[in-house]
Image (cartoon, rainbow, N blue to C red):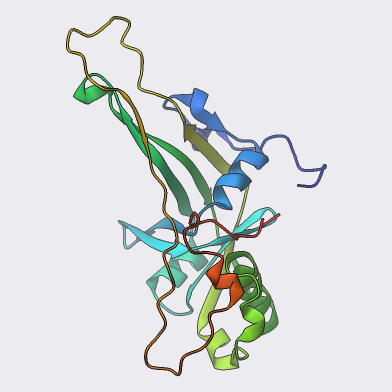
Length: 230
């Protein structure tokens, strides 16, 4: 991270965390780390006065979060015409307390609001998609056939500025009840994570040697190998 990045993002009051605000962070290093540890976000928008939400893959490059979709459709039209909200949540474990109401979840999350910027031009879109692969599957882009112009033309690429953004993190045991419960029960946390499983080759094509960059993923956390978007 460059030294000239601001200490916190200038998130306005409307987009700041209200509930248990002590768990909030507006620090770039916290927000970047969460975004760089995930693959899937959810983007909400309004269409015909109805709230909608769609899961998307995403990537961060510097002070922007990028995502792509079909060039024509309700989602792309919504991104071109209005504000959206983007969320990323990483679940880190279940929290077990003494009562049913004293259980929780440990998590890391980011919510970002703003008006998407359209990435225009074939070369600009190619460059954005190349960066997506560089971060997600380093070394694979260079082994693939060239992206055709018609494929680029049918794809819309957008980005959101990391401006109106907030992180929220919980990493602790259950809330202390202030007294020893009468019923003894195990309490603590049940950590969890998503890991990559062994690759499954496509049987429709001749067998190929598994590339080293894919073999290294097996058994690793889902964000293993993800290149920092800074």
